[in-house]
Image (cartoon, rainbow, N blue to C red; front, side, top):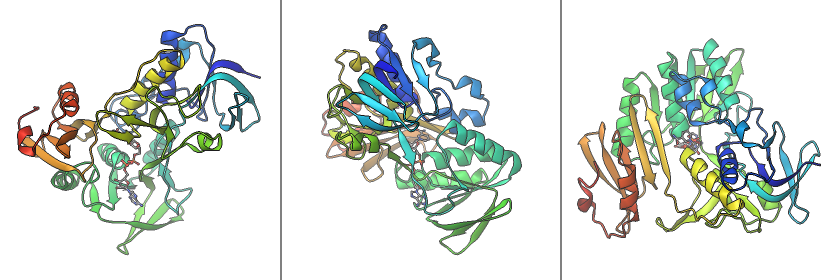
Length: 391
Ligand SMILES: NC(=O)c1ccc[n+]([C@@H]2O[C@H](COP(=O)([O-])OP(=O)(O)OC[C@H]3O[C@@H](n4cnc5c(N)ncnc54)[C@H](O)[C@@H]3O)[C@@H](O)[C@H]2O)c1
């Protein structure tokens, strides 16, 4: 029976960052990592960005092999016994641990049809599948106007494919951006050749040989060779819930990353934690959080005592436009847009009860620390106070 000082369930970015964190403090303890993926840990952002431009798969590996851990790939933990400090995989193998980390990530939400034919994009295997579809097919439909939808539509069009993009909101990134920016992105994507259909739903999918027929709410049918959906994700917290850990849209952890059971931790996008600067409970589904939270929780498992107060940070590329963002970007908050060049360069501030909750740095670089400092300020701010504050 494999037995470890630290057992990490999951093999994504947070899991690998945690391994690095453990090794910063403890070079002697044994570490086992169990992942249901066939690959060792890799960076996910290139899957929807760089790999469709000039980057290659060789560049995405996180090289955990220098950190002395035993990697169990293609294995899925299906049960936890916290009293006995044991985890069991689907093949019946039992792993014993002193400390446990759940870095189980999230699973894409699925539509109620097209089970085999819709590609839910999250892993390297999904990238290989879409690459192969793009070698044979010319016409694609992308469902969803969030991160995956906007990045994959751009990636496919930049690779010469014809793309229809469908989503329920009025604009691209409608849940993040103020309405005028989300609507601008619709025109911008159309200018790049994407057939953008805001406010359009999908009701069914049929396969006819190589062709897929996607039935839309409006009554129209799109004939395509590939359908990709990015309609959000749900946290993989069932294992934790079955083991009696506290869960609530994710695994609830304290500021050290410890769950409701001593010695059991959770990190990355499955973990729900309190952020004092924002005054709210969060679950963050971005690379920066996987790296910073993963590392810190790994250190804390190995006896450090570093509280996690890091503000969410993320970024994206939309063709030649790009942005960085700090804090909470929610288009339902009050927003104040400060454009240097409308929709090409500027800063958008997100306010709630007189405090800045989020800052969007639109084609505005090198200002992330200023944005962090502004969110930490108690205020109160009026929207007009923020004009020219950053940028
Ligand atoms: N740059 C980045 O940080 C980045 C890039 C890619 C992916 N991700 C992460 O990957 C995860 C998945 O991204 P995502 O794009 O799936 O989620 P998302 O939450 O960004 O977007 C979901 C979108 O799904 C659409 N939608 C919801 N229900 C729908 C339905 N029934 N039919 C059609 N459209 C529907 C909406 O348009 C919504 O904007 C997220 O956790 C995201 O943070 C992040």
